Amino acid sequence: MRTWPPRRVLYFRRALWRRRRALPAAGLALALLAAGLAGCRRGAPRGNWSLTLSTVPAVPAAGQSTRFVLHVVRAGGRPLSGASAQLSLKMTSMDMGANVVQLAPQGGGNYAGSGQFTMSGDWDCQAAVEAGGVTRQRTFHYKVE
Image 1 (tube, rainbow, N blue to C red):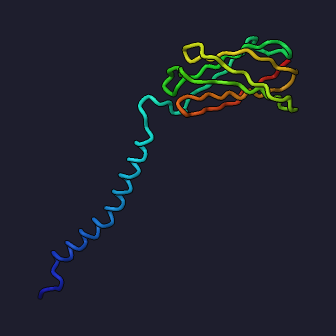
Image 2 (cartoon, rainbow, N blue to C red; image 1 turned 180 degrees about the vertical axis):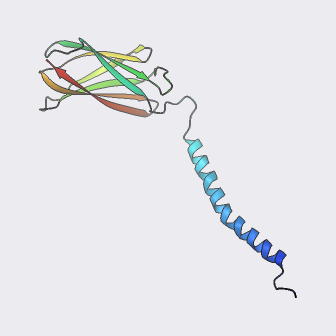
Image 3 (cartoon, rainbow, N blue to C red; image 1 turned 180 degrees about the horizontal axis):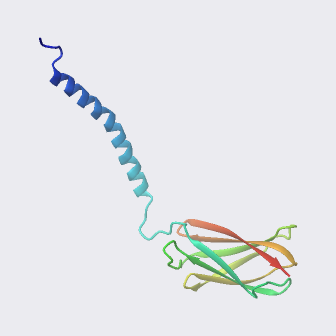
């Protein structure tokens, strides 16, 4: 006894149905891949940098000049050069106004500049580094004597 429709017709319908479901998923995957690659530029900084701040003197004193050195490295440990960097010094307990230190490139991923803490107490130093349209920020805490 023969069944209707024949098995090969049922097999063909199932295969066609699977392809119809897979085609939009493949198109979506291809579109996402193209969109991801469109924003990539070879050598462009990503933003996953490590920022380290050091001061001279190591324990800053109020009213005295302090030298700030910001060291910026990429994820692979390579120094980041060609960036612009600055520090915003803010006292945590009260508003002391704008206190911005521009950092100049020194080579080897180091950016340096001099500034001053106006009072003793707890301070936040917010470092901002911008390179290739990508900005990375990190806040460092200092106790000023």
